[in-house]
Image (cartoon, rainbow over the protein chains, first blue to last red):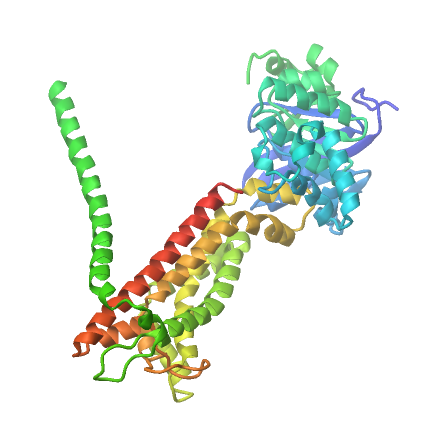
Length: 259
Length: 281
């Protein structure tokens, strides 16, 4: 099936008229788009354009912000995630998140990855060990930490910490992975590893990534959404958006004339 | 230009000298107190001081074993009251507290912290001593416990606030409910700081005398249980220091030395815990 924006694949998340206000300020203004399943969707735009706010609406992390008002619809597999009977705790098991700044817990590497499964009731030590190994392998970190799982996660390098945070998110076995500028604090080599990882993960997960780096968006994503001043300016297949944008504002931004 | 530069340099040096002088004074006072106490108190410092009861009036010798145990029991009671209330209250303030209620609690804690300790003693006297008809370890412990609460509450809140929000978000994003996040992530991350803060709160009330004067009173003998008056190091110091006996004066100095070492030891311990906490395991 082909969507109106030209991307193929089923829509995993559908967003309709999503508006977010922080007090009087409008952070997102009637945003509508479909996030295709098993694809990487990149959100780009200058600082303060609302792309992070958009991302944080998808797993309801904005619920914790004081004075926030959210209207419109976010549907995951057709079910409204803001419906009154939806527990954000359950939602976040299905929609995992990786943050801009790696934020491992001050615990051991093992405990970091095992945290999510433990919270969701996994007690069996054998299962936990399997889950931790599988998640670390998926995050391409296993070979580097296999012999020191009981060491503090804070001893790892920045890039390793970020991959640990990805492993930690994967251990919960989510369907969607949200990444908020996951490589912005990393050096080029660590960034390349994360990008490679994203490519591998999309076979199993639906990924939405916020990035400041347009080359990165071009490299890793299948679809790109360009946000400006809280509005979704353009959304479409990455290749088309970067080679032949339909809106002049998008072209100005991606050619570096502004932003 | 050079005149201005010279003036600036002069002012800079003067101010720098002033800060050094202030720091040296602070340190000097502590060293002087410690030294003078050691000089005066060490003469009566012996095993007897820790193991024997006070000698009958008129005789020399004896010790303050009952006051040392009494202070321990008073502090244990104070901790049993002050730590649970301060700890849980601090968690609420840091993690849930918002709006006017939290502001009111914070303000109340600050006011309570500023209430003169003797006033707290009088209130506990009216509520716990007058109705039962006698002084007790319990009443003294409650008075100290009440004094601990505001310090403990603010210490807990402050150290929980130092835990980065990124950790809370990481836990919530993994689908952990709020309370699980607090219990399994936030509190462990801030625990060393909190423990240090609570030890400091306990050390602070350890030397309080005024609230004990008409709650725990004093006792020249052992005080079994919690319902009888008890000796304590601060009240012993007060009683012995204003007595007319030379030997009691010497023992008051010794008691002062022991008390100061206890409080100082708690401080050093708390700081050691805190420093290891900063290294984050």
